Amino acid sequence: MATEAYAEMFGFLKKYDVELFPIVEGQLFQNGEPLEGVEIIREATYDDVETETTVTGVSGHFAFPRWRARSNTPGKPLVEARLRQVVAAWYQGEFYILWQYTTDQITPEPMIADLLGRLDCDIANEQADYYFPISDSPGFEHIIGSICKLKP
Image 1 (spheres, rainbow, N blue to C red):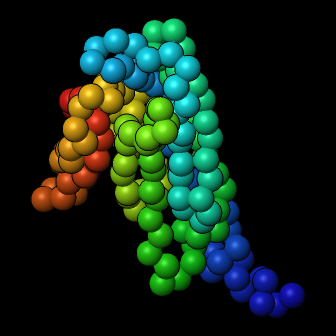
Image 2 (image 1 turned 90 degrees about the vertical axis):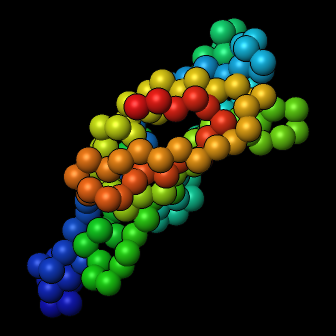
């Protein structure tokens, strides 16, 4: 009982809000033509690996709502937690990475939310790494792997 009181007092058991993903919206194409009926997988790795799926509509459009979790990990001493986000398309037996990103942030990041809210993806594109400056950390960059056209 005393151990729990000390843990609560020092934050070991306190639950924090963790934003696993902001709203995700986009379109999926193949050589400019919309792809309908393609499974889109959204995976978040923080305390555990969790996934959600949806399917593209007639125009290739897909969307996921904001995804949050409660976790005591941010209050644990000496833990350097990372959030890994992946959005992938499963098409004709192959995965296409629409979004791959790792961060130590557990609160919404405006640039990331903006990019994830307007994914323009074509499976004919080669996967590339995109580098965007982190506004509150000069000299550091967000690094995102994607086949989508990402523009700030």
